[in-house]
Amino acid sequence: MREKQRRAVGVPLVAFAALCALPGCSDTLDPQTQAPTLRPNGDVVAAGRNLLLSDSVPGDVMLAGQSIAFDGFAGGAYVGAGADQTVTGEVQGSVRAAGGSIELDATVGRNVTLAGGSVTVQQGTQIAGNSYLGGGTVRFRGTGSGDVYIKAKEAVLEGTFGRDVHVEAGSLTIGPEARIQGELRYKMQADSQPEVSAEADVAGQLVPLEPDDGYGVGSFVFKLLSLVLAAAVVAALFPAWLVSSAEELERRPVAALGFGVAWVLAVPLIVIVSAVTIIGIPMALIFAAAYGASLYLAPIVPALWVGNRVLKGREPVDRGSAMLLAALGSAVVAVALLLPWIGFLARVVATCAGLGSLALAIRSRHAEA
Image 1 (cartoon, one colour):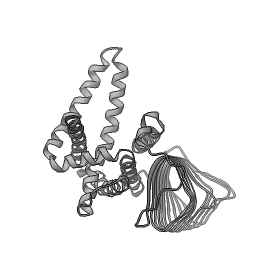
Image 2 (cartoon, rainbow, N blue to C red):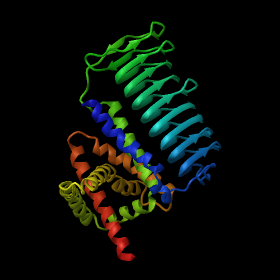
Image 3 (cartoon, rainbow, N blue to C red):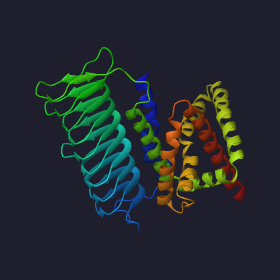
Image 4 (cartoon, rainbow, N blue to C red):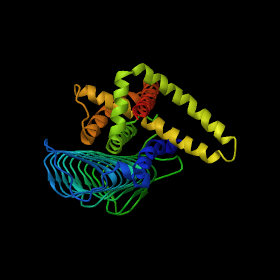
């Protein structure tokens, strides 16, 4: 059950990033193979099919696309969302990334948060702060000065760990190169035990832990990051639609909720009716997939509105500002969505508001055409 929950969190984001590779997305992307333009505030914000940044950036680096490579210097943080990501060089702030495959081989001045199908922290990586890693396969070969938190189907420890290591995984391997100066706390299935090499050096104890209730720090951070980076990807790929939907939510919040409720109730009926006939089965599958994706991504619309309110009415005038506002607002919205008890009601309201706002935006565009 817990493995299914982890997949449910990560799959929508990874799948959405992978969709960038499809031909149908080509019209929404601005393919870039050279360094993006530096913004006046010192940040770099860019989206495209292929992104390569090798320059020195005084501020933050925020990238979204299919294939992302960063091997320069960032005076601030790095935030990335994409199918394949490689981060090398030096980042003085924190590194936060989500996608299909993520490889980190850099010097990081603060914390690292990575979520993906495959996450690899290479041997040359130096992390000054804590590390929060989640994915199908997580391999840590670098050096972490702070605590390390890993949640994965398969976890492999082969690096140097300055403090405690916390792992929740289906399988856990501690290689001969592993050096853990603190304790190793792990959660596995009742019939599973970590594989510890005889050459590994664990200064502290190996402490088995009982499964928690799903609201642990690692789980919370992983889900929070997933929604934040999903918002950045959507804002990067479809800024016009996202901004239009947020404007409709601002103008007609009650109507947006009404249209959203209709969407939530009507689409399952369409799926059931379509599935009655053999000819309609493929259409039903398409509707079902689109319905699931829409439910996960719908809160991003009110997130953009919240980000605008947090920054005191700053309007998203371009792709970069839309990414910033959506990511900021989704962090606020995600906290409400992930709270016990309150989270369910918050998700229902945010989902209906987002879906209804999108429906209103589509209707307005058709009316103007």
